[in-house]
Amino acid sequence: MLAMLPYNAEPWRILRYRNRVAEMAVAKAACLNHISRESSDVRRLANFYREIFGFEEIESPYFGEFKVIWLNLPGAFPMHLIERNPLTKLPEGPYSAASAVGDPSHLPRGHHICFTVSNLDSFVQSLKDKGIETFQKSLPNGKVRQVFFFDPDGNGLEVASREAP
Image (tube, rainbow, N blue to C red; front, side):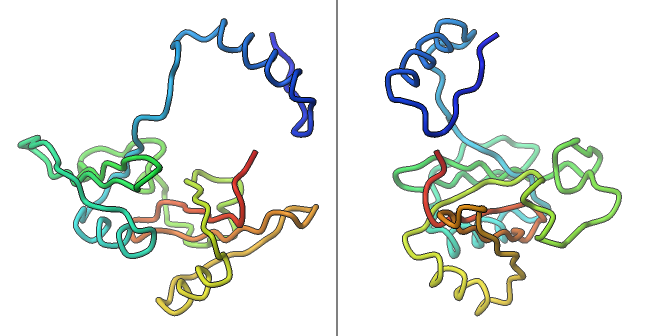
């Protein structure tokens, strides 16, 4: 079992650690391909991610029995928006909760996707202008500021003032 390295570890220790982890990995050269979100209204959710983060709609394959919209964030990753199956409650989806929490102050310890923006203050003001409820906090060292909020389907989102290590 490999021990976790501290964030400020010496570069040579990090490289050695990464090499050992890569040797142990089942999936060699793995990378993030896409993320997905289930939605009761994929068009509404696509509009939200385009307007808030600048995702672009890309060609989506036809799945027949359910709607999908594929989005891409230039320089980052694709997002697949998938029409929710009303007969199924996936354990990690926002529809699985007994009741909606709706309080973004719970998101730092919950499922969320994090983005980084160039101007956090301007971004937060834009969210407020759109009437989106947020929760803001800073890490104890004050170097990273965060804002948490929900998309229209209740998926947790975070935007940080700088990239996480």
